[in-house]
Length: 210
Image (cartoon, rainbow, N blue to C red; front, side):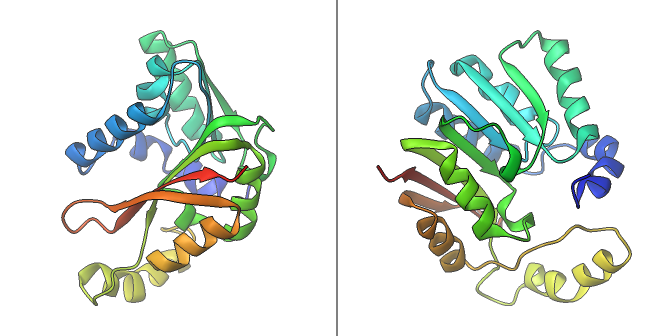
């Protein structure tokens, strides 16, 4: 059993029923990834949740292996795939360390890296599974530079929620921490951008060095 799987299994139904908070930003992310991916690409998505992104990208690639530590989340993804008739997405319970070896044309880690206790170890495994010059796309929560409401929530309320099992592990990453860790793993960052508005998530598009 993966360490955090029990938490995500417990909230799978609620997670699946929750609407995407910023639909416009999400659609913009999907459009950007569609531009980066090719019809003959094989893709690994880590932390796929209930498979919404994998299924949205599936028509534009050859094959996606969508992984998550929560089998309950993956069951939701399998149900979605069956409902829409998608056949080129496989759902697999795993984390970065035991994901299929690949190598893959692209590896995606969306809303995942800040939830990992061993970020350097996970990124090293991701690099192993990415083809030379292959694509790595991540979208990661980074701590706000100013002490706004989100900053105070993470500092004060989040530890309480974690103590009673209502929140998972959460790394307090700065944008420089994130970029340094991705570079250390052997990737060259080619583009970064922050989500619009007050959304503190940072998208990093990187390529694995030859």
